[in-house]
Length: 304
Ligand SMILES: Nc1ncnc2c1ncn2[C@@H]1O[C@H](COP(=O)(O)OP(=O)(O)OP(=O)(O)O)[C@@H](O)[C@H]1O
Image (cartoon, rainbow, N blue to C red):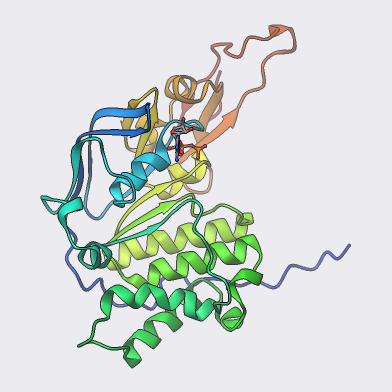
């Protein structure tokens, strides 16, 4: 087995992209009920996404994170209440108008057949085109930058369907970047990615937020990475928001136990100072009990 490092496809910390061209309107769920046929996931939920922040939705499997993100992205219609963008009901807005303000990476995007990676990423420019505004060299430049920033330049001419899971995930992220929307919704953007590429993507997301002022809402499963790269965490479960706040306010042993049925110690990550979640195995004599009450939160060292 080779011990040499794999060829890196690093993404630059600051993407070469101009500031978002359209002003971001605030995104807000007002009294929304989200349901599938007869199963209600949320009822009368209020949640305002603060402009210019990175907000990450966390929660156990099936708690409704994707459902909520889909409602924010206009992919799922509330059965009551409304999602508003800039104070207007998102469902009454024209698709192109929404797409200029909001880009969404769904959990399982359908990859078109016989489409090159470059063509896939170019679809991100569609909302900016019209009869009177055809493809321009600027569009090509933006697509090239998105390919470069996701480490895909070398793969640009490959059939997208032939990419590995991680490469394809980066191609979808490149499409979202090329859209240059001021609000970006990402459902599990690190799925399929090795740890290095997970960090690359999250650093890229943060740089787009910090450099371009993009508002980001994402779903992540890795709680430590969520704490490291988010301004705000929203924990969902049991049909409601269990907790909402800065990472250190939310990633507490009590909330982790409530939301995930997880016993964990929370310590300060030595490299960033953000919360580092350390799951605790049940004591050997604890039988089937999952909670031993020893979890704690400490910024200075491990306790419990
Ligand atoms: N298309 C659908 N039809 C019916 N029920 C659905 C559909 N999509 C999701 N659900 C149900 O809605 C609930 C919330 O699902 P959702 O995918 O939003 O959860 P999640 O928190 O994103 O889960 P995960 O972490 O597993 O991705 C679950 O009970 C799920 O089974």
